[in-house]
Length: 179
Image 1 (spheres, rainbow, N blue to C red):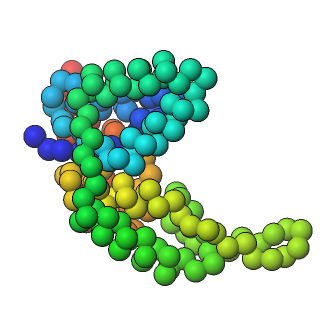
Image 2: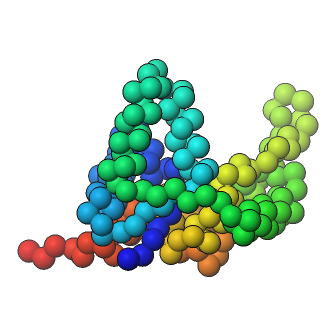
């Protein structure tokens, strides 16, 4: 059975009830529950989910719900290894050297310069979120692919990593029904 890492945004499709993505994302986790696929998460993804728990109006209830969801779907958290950290550092270093004083669009990957409309000073970014590189490296090392809705950063810095949307992975594990 293939093993796929899951990015935080796929969980958020469900927890935020985001249409039109809710049904497909939910079906991915149902496939894991039926042992059609093996899903894993990194410490980073789990941490991002726990931030949502901490920010919720009822953190204890939210934590119990998250724990039940992870148990029900049999999602395994695999800790980062030195190899993952080195791969993330490689990708992030490449990103920083390309970026300079530019911002990178998370959707298309285009680099743009941002200027303050009041004073004209170029605003330089502090950093792209390092967790994206940790998620990508973790998936590249520990999984057959990454289930995500955000492709550009992973395509650019982890080109050998197979990226699948929930809809794409479902077409692999559940062939279309014939009428």
